[in-house]
Image (cartoon, rainbow, N blue to C red):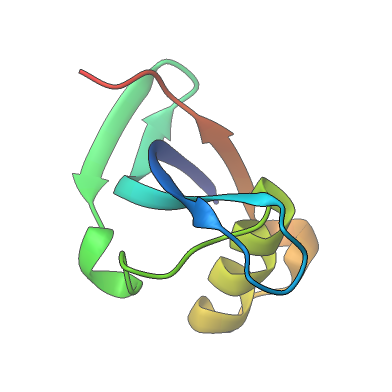
Length: 78
C-alpha cells in the first residue's frame, strides 16, 4: 500500500531536542501519480513524528500490515 502525506511543522522534541513534524493530510495513493481517498482520520494528527520512518511503522502497526507492505511518500502542501 502506498500512502502520501503532507507535513506540518511540529515542535522540538523535549527528549532529543530534534525537530518533529505532524501529518497534515494522509491519503492512500491510487496509482504512482494519482492520490486516492483521504485517510487522515486513521491517525492522530496532533502526534509529533520524529521521522518519516516512525510514520511508516505507525501506519503498518495501525493497519495490521507487515512494514514491507507499506510505502509512504511526502507530497507538497497544496
